[in-house]
Image 1: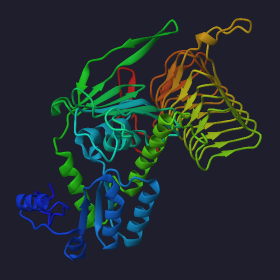
Image 2 (image 1 turned 60 degrees about the vertical axis):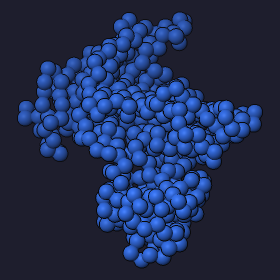
Image 3 (image 1 turned 45 degrees about the vertical axis):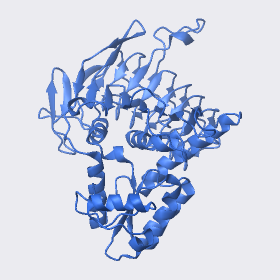
Image 4 (image 1 turned 30 degrees about the vertical axis):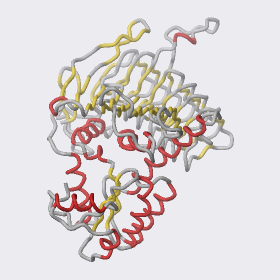
Length: 500
């Protein structure tokens, strides 16, 4: 591919015959690695070698002043990858890792769908990379197949997992796993798993992304017109029971391009401009942190010891006031602050950069997204789910059963309540369970919500009724439906508001 782009100057291979064949095929000379590093006309090096050699070769290339593209994984140890990152920064060289799927047009479009909110709040992601393929003798299936999928999942979720566990089996060679399943749990409540195997009867490369407003499937085995499909499935709650509403697959139009060509072209552009690659050293380190933890989990399992458990479920830079109380099995994302007399109950997942005010109770198994603000004296009961950027005003109320009685056990009758991204709930408002608050809706102070609220709706009264629309920035929209703060234009169609 580099030859097609006019960027290949020489090839290196420790096998002289292989080097001669590759050189002849590309019409370039075959040289030794030392000769390549000594050539001042060579600006950049691509390291495509066994994983155990990646660190040494990349370090030598950086020391020689070369920009470096390293095939995945960046290294076999997080410490080595961090050392490479420091070397690259010190030498002002580009260091890029070859997470190829990040450059696949279907995946880039999938990322756009998530950013656009087409799938809503991400809930679950899983990836299958299976084949009856070449079996490695130096690296197991986890290190050989899983880096691509872990890289994609981290990009979609936008966070590091707070817990990683892995299971695997060695069928062909002693301690080299042929099949692994890696599970990841994220601070925002998202879950993911990666299933990889080179002992599978057919090839499968499929990534499934599930959100609360839709689902998407990237199947690289399909032709271009069906590689990426959107499913606008939904759930309707009837009598306290969920009922699926299925939709037809919607193929997503893609611009066809070879991922390897896009990756190589991106590297060359970064070398020319000095810009940071999409899959830079920091991204490679994040993937390695997951791989290293999964590998440790595998080794514990094979030794008959307990599965790897996190040392702490609390991320970096978290502040929890000494009067607050966090139960076991609580996950709190980086930068979150928990103030006086608040109680976070077991199983709850709080995202990053949240503010939990005084005297707040977060119930069992509650999911709170990133950048949420919960003011004083709020109870977020089990069954409530807050998406990213939700604001809960002082003393607002959530319920979790429709007809509570102190003397009747209703624990098996909790009805979920979902609050969409960016929505705001005013002080002393009440949200009856089983209803959904749409994205960026604004519930006025003291309102009582008794039915679903559409996105961008301004709701007031008892029971709450829509009296207007608000923008993403929280400004009340006039008849022109233009946000006075940002100038963003909106359009109303069939009782729904959408950004233009």
